[in-house]
Length: 230
Image (cartoon, rainbow, N blue to C red):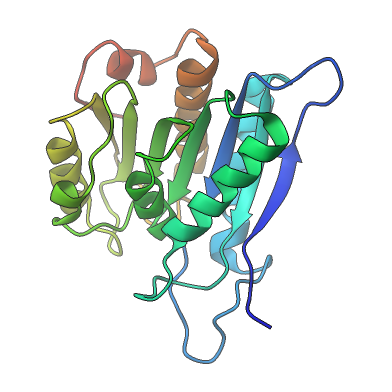
């Protein structure tokens, strides 16, 4: 049987409290020759659980927050995580309605997928955490105007290059507002300074989807600063 992507709800308001926005949290994880299926217990998936929970708490019952499990590990030329994101967005349009704005929050290759899916219908904003990107992605990605993007990268990441993500962020500014938050001492797994990664992602999501007043450093980014170090 061909593996399929799955959406795991973290919090989905029901009844009269219809969600005002939705957040899809995307995991990373390299491919493996012997096991291509994504497991809910793999570390790259588990690392996004506290991120999703932090966003759900910050949304205070106004956001639908879901985690996407990709159909396969890594990034395959025949099927990339971007296709899984497209599938997830179609599912949300069907279940929540076409007018519910969506923020994509992804880590590592999930960050790359979020950026590449920024032009999809319904996407309102994007957060890329320690995104694994190629410099050529800057030319390949076109984010529609009015869809703010935030790249958050630890300056001690040895797996995904902060320099490359900064280059891509600069290229994306040709069409939309893109902020870059550099976390001093942050590494790829986001275990060091994990609370900072989670807080910044949640703050950006609630500010862009719900209009909540942002806190530092997101307030500076949404106020026009292109780069902030914390």
